[in-house]
Amino acid sequence: MNKGEIKIFQRGEGKTEIQVRLENETVWLSLEQIAKIFWKNKSTISRHINNIYNTLELLPERTVAKYATVQIEWNREVLRDIEYYNLDMIISVGYRVNSKQATQFRIWATSVLRDYITKGYALNQKRLKEKWYSELEWAIQLVKKALESGDISKDEALGLLDIVTSYTNTWLLLQKYDEDDLLREGKTKELRYKLDASEAQDALFELKENLLTKGEATDLFAKLREERGLEGIFWNIYQTFWGQDLYPSLEEKAAHLLYFIIKDHPFTDGNKRSGAFLFILFLAKNNILFDSEWNRKINDRALVAITLLIAESNPKDKELMTTLVLNLIN
Image 1 (cartoon, rainbow, N blue to C red):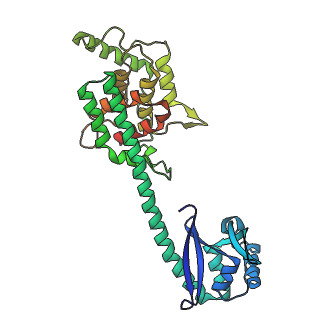
Image 2: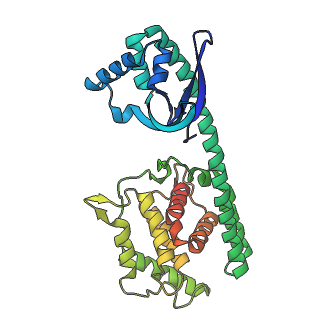
Image 3: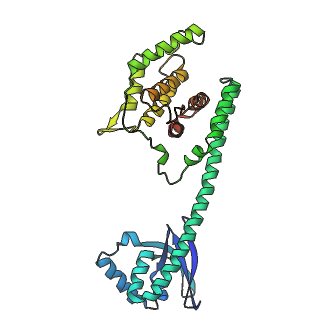
């Protein structure tokens, strides 16, 4: 569709057929074609086009484009760059020289464009699905790799599959080709509670004591590899640029907190569990852990799954991972 499509416009009971180029959601005609549509000579059309530009009614950079066109000259085909004008210019000229014919062409063009855009949307939907299938296959390969390596149990693998299959709409929406970033937006702009590294470390210490009592952790759990490693992560999620938060919403801060702890490995052991714990703590402190019915927005199984998915992911897929977390929160 981006390379253009040709439609036939018939003028005056089919006496004249004109090939109309469709591209970038508008129609394009050459000077000669505009003259044929409105029953005028090219010099008349050219004069009106110049007047339209001189009065700044329309701008050349928005209404004219050059396309390589094959012409017959002296019984041979010659490829030349010909100027084509879009629908705005065609209609502006048309109302100056033949308003009835201009109205007819506008009605025809509007109908054709509507079909064209609908067709383009259908094609994009197909491309979206194809892209989504590749992302789904990628996620399943992660599960397979983790199982083969013995890093996860059967229950954890089921959790991973659960998140892949339960959030198919998220995977599809993430692949929007228009890059409108709708799914990157969090809902909560105001920071309600600023969890810091010191409080996070204290909370992890309490968790560690509890896990040690149950025999579910060693002394290495949540032990910092570098003294200021956790501080760096919290500085990261709160950082600003020209007075604006790099991650404007609470949800975005939470998603990146989870990601950074898992991928940056600030602790000697237990980075996934520590990341998941601090992620939940951050959401709870900021009153966005539960929905209006006091249901947890992210259940335990989904949290385990997304934690493992982040751990197994390639660093180049950071945006994909954090966007998925955003969708789970929202």
